[in-house]
Image (cartoon, rainbow, N blue to C red; front, side):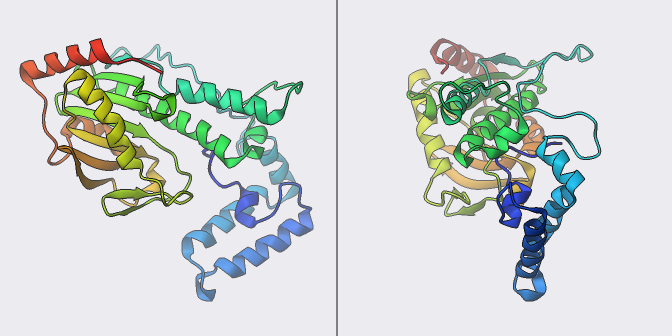
Length: 304
C-alpha cells in the first residue's frame, strides 16, 4: 500500500532536502542512525523509521523509483486520485448511503494545489505522488483526510442494509462539517475520519495531536454534532473519531461523554466490529425510534 500523503517522506525522516546529493544522503543516514539508536538515547521507533527510509531511497535506483512515485518492486505507479467504487462481484445488500464522502476536501485540495503551483502553470496530474510529496504539509493533510473519509465510507457501506449513512454533513461552515452520520441498531453516531500522520495521544478525555497539541478534536466534534442534534431533535449515542491503525496504540479508547453521548477514538480496522457490536455504555437506538430518527435526519441533513 502507498504511504499516506501526510506521512513523513524518507527525506524528511533523514533530515535532508529532496535534491540532496547521494553523499549528503548517506551522511544524513549515518547521523540519524547515531541520533536515534536506543543505546545512545534514541528510541526504537525512530531508529526503525530511519532504517525504513534508507531502504526506500538508499541506492540511486531505489531513489529514482521512489521519486517517480512507483511502488517498490512493482512495475506500475500508484495514485491518490479518486478510485472507481464499482464492485461488480459484490452483490450483498449495502448500507443506505447519502452524500459524497471526502468530496469537499477533494475540491479544497484541488483549489489549493492550483494556487500553490501558480497561475499559468500546467497541472497535468494533481495527484502525482512526486508533486504531492513536494507540497506543503497543510495541503497534504487535506488530501490525507479526504482519503481517510473515503476509506471509512467503504467500511460503513459494508455494514448492510440495516444501517443508514450520511457523508459530508453540513453544520454551518464547510470546514466544520461532520464527515459521517451513521444510524443503525447499535445507535446514532457522529463521526470524523482523521489522518494525523503520526501516533496520537489521549489526555483529559481529549485527543492530543502531534503537530497541533492545542487543538481539541473531540470537543469540536461535539460542537458539530450539537448542531445536527438540535436541528433534527435527536440524541447521538456516541461521538467517534476514526484514525489509521498505526496512529493509535489500542483498538478502541473510550474517552468519556459529551451531553450524554459516549466519546471514543477507534482504529479503522476495528470500526466494523464497533458498529455492529456497539460502544460500551452508548445508548442503543431500536424499534420504532430508529425509524423516527431516520425520518428526522433525512428531512434535516444538508450536505456541504
